[in-house]
Structures are given as C-alpha cells and as structure tokens.
Image 1: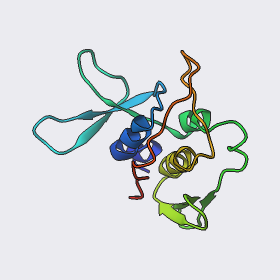
Image 2: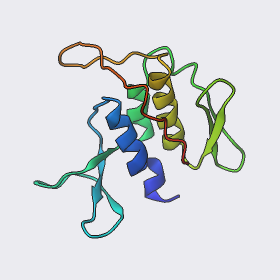
Image 3: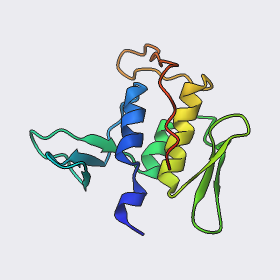
Image 4: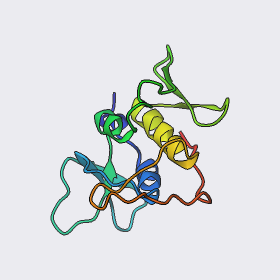
Length: 136
C-alpha cells in the first residue's frame, strides 16, 4: 500500500481546516510551486507552508467521543471503505483515513457534533454553505 493512503488527501485536509478544525498532524502535504501537486512530508520544514495530513489515529482523536463507537465506516472485501455521509448516503473511499475524515466532516456539517476551540473553549462556528467534499 502506498504511504499516501495512510493519510488524508490534500483536498480533504483543506476541507477539515475550513471547518475550523486544527490538530497537530504527524505529516504534512507540501505544495510544489509551479506544479499542481503535493508531496507528503514527515515533518514540516522551516519557513515552508503545508497542509496537515491526518492519519487514522489522529482522526480517531478528532472524531468526538461517543461517535467513534457509532462510526458508520465499513471495510469492504476489496480493500475499499464505505462511510455514511448523510441520511442513507454511503460513499466509497480508497482508504480508511479518507473514510474517517469524511465521517468527521459529515458529523460537523450536519450539526451532530459540536467543535470547541481547545484554547478558548469557544464553540467553533461552521458555515453551512461550504459543501462536504465527496470526491474519493
């Protein structure tokens, strides 16, 4: 399995950030200037900007307590994962990290889970007009 499949994609990571979710990640996606691609880096290099790349353990910490046991993520026989991202809406993803990330996005966007800023303990406002990314 490719190393990149153990982490959320750059697009999914950006969608998580747009929801106001901030969590230290063990890896980062670094944009390659002049090219339309990202490279996975284990550590963010000084003076470089990157997008957090979350693995399944980090996503387990992000999914609010109580929802993890109820998580609607199914592993299929062919190695793909299906996740509930709406009422009776199941989407297939190529990795467990992507499936968990989209489940987290669904919980927040649907209002089922409330996020709080860890420093200020204030509720994080989520804009309902931002679409949930559905691209596997």
